[in-house]
Length: 187
Image (cartoon, helix red, strand yellow):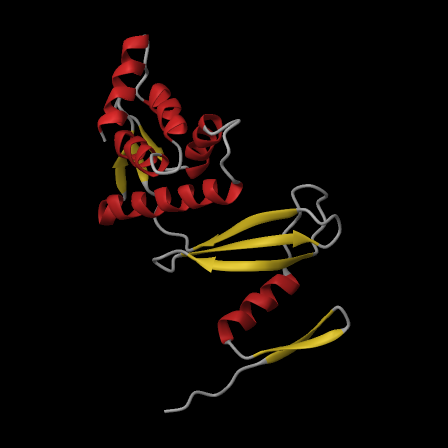
């Protein structure tokens, strides 16, 4: 069975570009009509440099460049699902927020030779794992979030791993640092 070819042509830099893929077509139409606002200059004209889907196909990561100031930034498109609830140690319930994890990762990787792309990759892996752990219950514990973050930091930077562990596990004396470092050395 043959499917009809669906294509559009649209102008870019004075030249017309043809797109045959229906998903790419809708993506281009969306970007033309609803450009992302640049976080630096607030212009709404940008171009997509790269698009990637996560392994489940539930989100698309787009690298963009502002046509006004040249700033490069990342946007995500996700399917809205029932939110995942994180059960805190004290029993409180909060919606899962990857930006909280991102703040912690940025703090523990500060002044280390870790790129923005590596951080985004870590965050994507953490988020994918949390959605898998939550399953149909749509709940995870804060301990699961912390342990998954440590699991993803370990192969990237052991220094970042120890920094994150010191806050996450609330180290309050030098012996706990030494114990964690010795544990890393045995791995």
